[in-house]
Length: 168
Image (cartoon, rainbow, N blue to C red; front, side):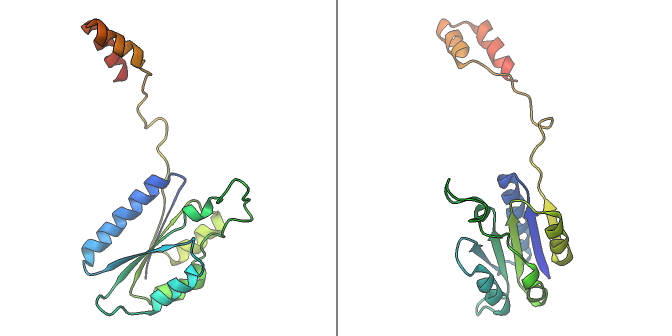
């Protein structure tokens, strides 16, 4: 069975990692069709179950992507955590995914330890994408745009050089 789960607080990194996996899967199966499912629509679990049971007419495999990151954010300021949809539960579809020839890629914002155990049981790959640590990011000194502008206006090459070196 082919189930990939990516989760983490850095949404861009999670999306980048998932798209890299989808790209590799697409290279292995060029005829596969990518089918995105949106959790905002009602009945996504029923649609997923139907997709896993079907065999497409013109292609053999589907790569089904479920992006659950946006569904975990309240829709308005008045919304509470009670208004938010529940985290997508794959355990109800585990046997169906196991028997299906299709691939399922799920993107989640965060997972609790009990859900990690459930996903680990059924997923071929589950990966937490951590945001870059501050020690890994380059330390940039603030460069005043006014100082750079003044140095350019005065045609002072030394002052301009000093300001631009601060950026490195």
